[in-house]
Length: 137
Image 1 (cartoon, one colour):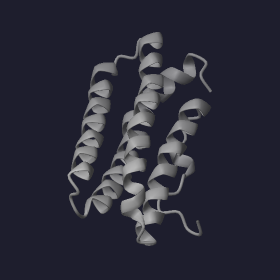
Image 2 (cartoon, rainbow, N blue to C red):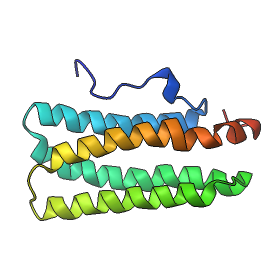
Image 3 (cartoon, rainbow, N blue to C red):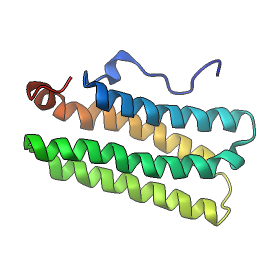
Image 4 (tube, one colour):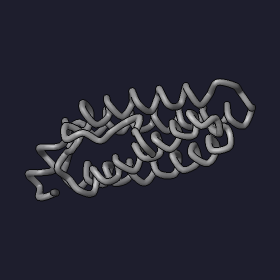
């Protein structure tokens, strides 16, 4: 891939290797979808990327939520609700894909780009200090 659509930047880092690596994986999925979109073979890849995104979200959110419980994160309820909204949106993309709705790829790309920026730079930054204080790096 010559130019990534969504590039990892230093400001995305929470300095928590496990979670940073998981965020990078989600970014990788977004970039794969964008690359397929640009090559006009996105419809063939969209279903598998949505499936992988659905599974990976469960894995990633599970990691964060386990740490919320372990460290007593006070913003847990709001953050978990955000996770639930994400999972519901991905399920709706899957339903739309299965119904052969058009123009879905661009919608998924924009959703993921916007969500990643908000999720990492705003939502996840809220727990960064607590997790670091508890020894996660």
